[in-house]
View (cartoon, rainbow, N blue to C red):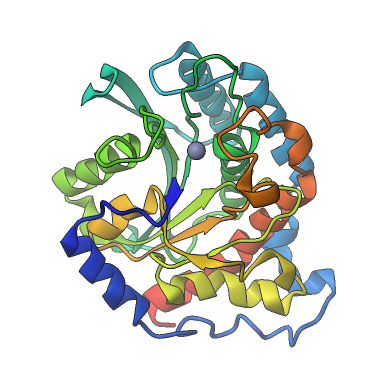
Length: 331
Ligand SMILES: [Zn+2]
């Protein structure tokens, strides 16, 4: 991802302006019911199930694979690891293999992976679908082994643990798709469309062609969430009401320090969903090390990340999802 992209389409820029003008705090009903309690009870039962030690073990395993750029052996090993873990939760991962054509490196084989959690009830196949995503690929670099502990690793580890927790609770009011995304990173050094977001663009096209896109009512992206000094930005492309679904309960649970970071435009996989008209939020801390100096460098290693940060974003996500469901279902 990169900040302040200059190459978004005119259509998308107009949409982003509309989104930015949307209703503030529109979905925060119930989010502040704890009245600012600082106790664990404010987190809610489900959020307490998020095990940061398990998420950290996933992160260690991903980093141990080494570089995981799209089309590499490391990416294949990553998909295999994700599949093994998801199956151990009783879930059925689906591979979405494709060839990214005519990239700066030619044709590159890529593979998204997802699991579906159906909604409860007789009309489950009509329930709104909430997609939670993370890219798992790491950026290609020559000359050093970029392991992407924070960038690609942290959010993928959190999404795996979210899969375990969400599968424990049984069907919910909304359906969920947990989407592990390949090919977010630009193949070139710099970020210039369309050399980026290969996996999310492909997935959105698949949603369109299958007719499922009309059911996708929210996309929640996690990225760069492992920084020891975690603070989620206020990404200006993200829909404000969707951001508030997560930030409001975080504030109410005494976790304000993790949210409401700097407001800026951050281009990331959520742009693929926004371009398709899906309300989206990027839960991202795009301030990694002094002056963001650890981002896309050999410094992006485990010692810059912490289990506590993985736990915080995992719990914030779980606290926010009921707000998203209430907003989408109108109750
Ligand atoms: Zn990156």
